[in-house]
Amino acid sequence: MAHGHAPQPPAPTPLPGVANIVAIGSGKGGVGKTTLAVNTAIALAKLGYEVGLIDADIYGPNVPLMMGSGQQPRVLPNNQIEPNLAHGVKVISVGLISPGDKPLVMRGPMLHQIIRQFLQQVDWGALDFLIIDLPPGTGDVVISLVQTVPLTGAVVVSTPSDVALQDARKALEMFHQVNVEVLGIVENMSHFTCPHCHQEIDIFSKGGAERTAKQFNIPFLGSVELDPEIRQGGDKGLPIALLGEDSPKAKAFYDVAKQVAERAEALSAKAENIFEIS
Image (cartoon, rainbow, N blue to C red; front, side, top):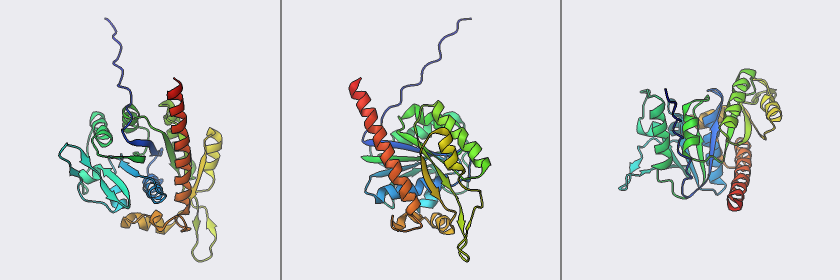
């Protein structure tokens, strides 16, 4: 029996007008990945960048709630989808197309189709950053993403607990396997400051993400404390980053956003130089 070669997937194609595509991922759910994606996108927009946000967490699309944007996007005459605009960020999510509590049940090929549509059929215009909120884990969506567009890099989010860090290391290895540069790791829910005694309480331990960053020789982008106001902002559709970079509550997200911008722009410039030389 003759063995034919499996067809090679098409090479990833850059999105016209989009300078940097940054994926935000985690090894497991519940570590605040969407909170980081939403607040980083808003922080970048507040810092003067043109920003888009794709909610690629198909099974748990929380971005519409957290961005306070629930209206269905318009389909333009050229069959392109117009993203919603929320807090200065262009947003698309499957939660805008299939709102409510009804779960989406779909297999890998359908996921691939949705990801391609969100990237190529949405009228993003000119963007400095397109942030992609990935589903937790190491599944089909990431593969679809890297096959469709060239990613500038990825950010991994973890809590400091050993269980979360074990899964975060899998996410780091996954990005390494698919040749995506990791811009850094963020420790979320790093500590809780008691409002009464002002003591720091390490509910999920502390410092584990920084140790993991050293172990993998990747940048540590900082820690975000466990703060009820961050959660409340997301639940109300008014993320904490809207308070601006001078707010102590929002500062950690601006620190992350600035480092992501700096690293992504450096990598994009390096890629352009390599392209010009070759």
